[in-house]
Image (cartoon, rainbow, N blue to C red; front, side):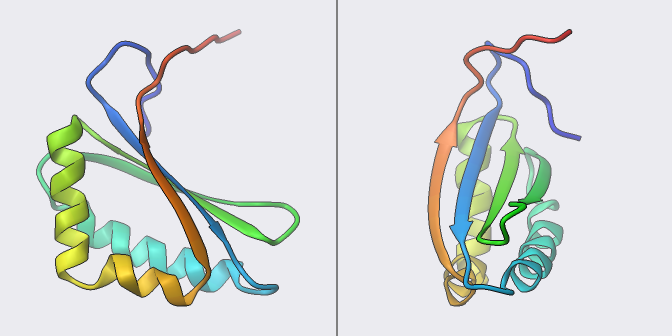
Length: 105
């Protein structure tokens, strides 16, 4: 389950993919399989996939315990061709983030 708290060591990789019409589900299926591979890496916490309502984007929200764990997950996926493989589904705009602020009701 995602952890969204400020001032922790948790690192969140947010990757926004732009996909061609009708391409969302194929990418979601691919990323779900990649998450199943990544979840064995020490420090992996969660992965959540989001589809835009207009059908043009998919967002991958993945968390690790810290930056070293994020690097391990990325290296693990790269070694298996799963990072380069997602390029066939659309264009990606990845980044690593930390939670700076949260507010709940």
